[in-house]
Length: 195
Image (cartoon, rainbow, N blue to C red; front, side, top):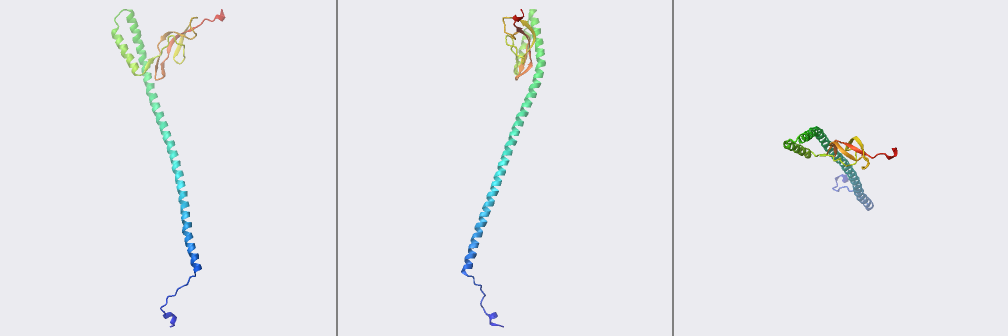
């Protein structure tokens, strides 16, 4: 066996200083490049997440607005339905009220005590007030087709055209809607051009 194999020396590779400087500079630059890349990636991910959050917030705002609109519409539909049913009932009730008024007039003309009937009429009027049913004031007003229904015309040169001269049947309004228009007589000035 040779002396080289029996030696106690450990073989060592020598690296020159130039190679050490090159390898050190490469090692230092790799982590810097890697950190910059990670930072860029994280920035991009953060920006994407911000966009997703912004889009989700917008969707949430739209859904919330739709919900609020639906809630308002539903509430309005319910109120309209309830008011419509109350108005239907009140129209039937008003017909009975009219009958009581006519009965009171007949009793009063006969000079019979109508105190009991007056008490019933007051109760009926209280019920109408409770449900916001109000009479339409017409006498002396100018005819309005939204509130009045003209069934006769009289000539009167002292009044403006379409002045209501007589209420034939009382009209009623409830919650801004007409339950029943007032039947009226209106004036018309004589036409002087025809003479």
